[in-house]
Image (cartoon, rainbow, N blue to C red):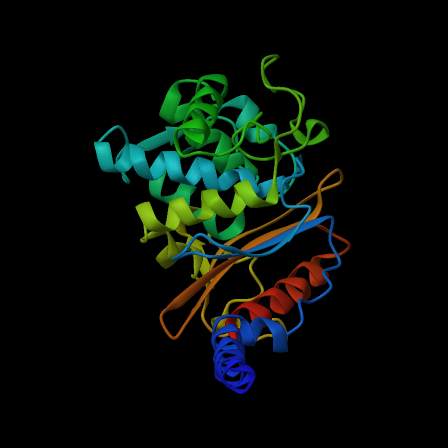
Length: 296
């Protein structure tokens, strides 16, 4: 009897080891990278699983990452007919004086929704985001209300709260910002990944714009380049195969932030890095996350 008992376990134990290795083997062999940032998450978009989570549920300033929600709402407005790509937008005094990265739009000049949207996606222009918010909802405060309502609708946590359409910090809002636009947006890294996933799934066309190397503002005789240095088309030291979006940003409070997405062999990952120490490091840290995720 004892011999049969040991024989049974001699068969069962190797089978269990094989099953465990098949399930967890890659993760046991590939160690999780150390990430130099205040927070970081890596999401498998198709499953929604967080493959890495470093302070991912901590709310913190997120700079331009909040523009992902602005982009989502503008695309919804286009889909429903609330906005048209060729609609003209008159630039307000507030939009013309908002700080941070911008197009130096002049008070009273007119641009199309399409031009402003592409400038916001490719170049992360704050003045373009403000102008679109005002055109969409009448004023930015009403647009921010929509942003927070949409956040709740798509399942973002109450720890993420939008304060303006651009992601600009309080010190960047400029001298003409409305009194009801104050404070700085805070988001968690995990909510940012969830928002990016929802945006891509609902409006995959966003990747055609976010992957553009540059765009031309014909009336200004100006070319603006994409702030996402990981795009393969840039062929730079930070380029990463399969990258086609989404958003880089910086404020003095948030530090250097990035929400990136890449697809390889039919598998799409979303990486969020908040509070990296430099503009270069946010891309280096994202590379670590992608390398880890695609090796699993």
